[in-house]
Image (tube, rainbow, N blue to C red; front, side):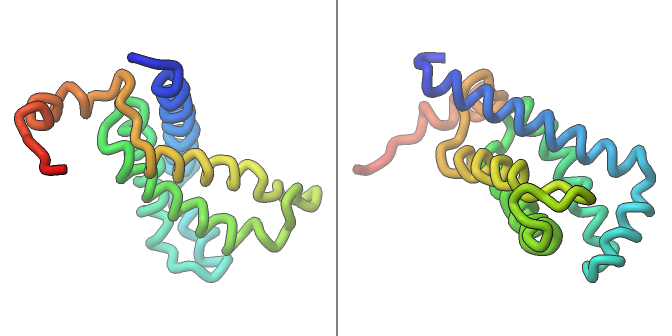
Length: 141
């Protein structure tokens, strides 16, 4: 790691990955059919629960390892927009006592968008796997 900026980005990437990995794992361990039922109850197709849980679980691992960070973060950002708009916006920024608000979702969205735009090279497997390809490619400016 060459600078403080990349170190900070690494921390954001790993923490975001850990949070989403745990959320995805919880959806599967808690019984994915419960999540399917909940999706259906809020008017979303139940099969989306499998996609969301998979993106969270696999995407979380990918972020922790530094694989396809921009793409994964983009998918997670879309997931967070969906969660905010479909579920959390109605309960407000801080929630209503029954359900948490969208303040954490908004923070996760911001981190995901930042990584999708910026990328994260620090301790990333992408750098090991694709580094030679990038070094051998010339670009025209």
